[in-house]
Image (cartoon, rainbow, N blue to C red; front, side, top):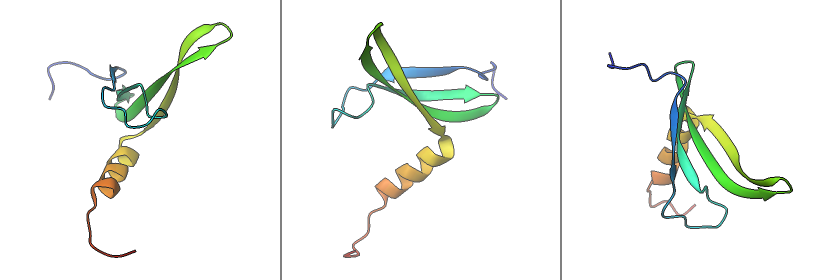
Length: 77
């Protein structure tokens, strides 16, 4: 059991090795009611000033995507 309660907390960190302009400027994770989610943010400019645009997804989706991206096979299709 952790020494602290991390429910309803999260972190966002700058992405230092963006490969494409559309990749997230910030990435992290957030805990909502005891469930973990990945969290991405992009810097945007609007008519009322600068803001962050957010995307959120389940850790299951992130794990599945990472597993598929890391899958290395020699099949030609």
